[in-house]
Length: 109
Image (cartoon, rainbow, N blue to C red; front, top):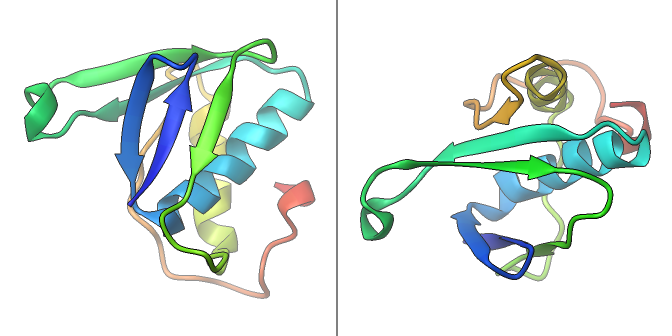
């Protein structure tokens, strides 16, 4: 399980594979200077609630992976996550769809 650390205050754990996809989507949005909400369900230790953060280019954001090897990237998952990030409700965790086509170029997402 890797971690997202936001503003050195909010910490959330995600599977390394999901985290790799989130990093690409979030990086692409920030590179384009497009702020957005990112929301997820909290685990039992946080009371099973929900957290939303406003992600913007000036925010301090760290992606910390547990594993040492990069995950393979599913282009269909990137596309689904990017569509969510571009919607008014913002980015949220979606289940991984079946991969289609060639591996994604992270700069094209």
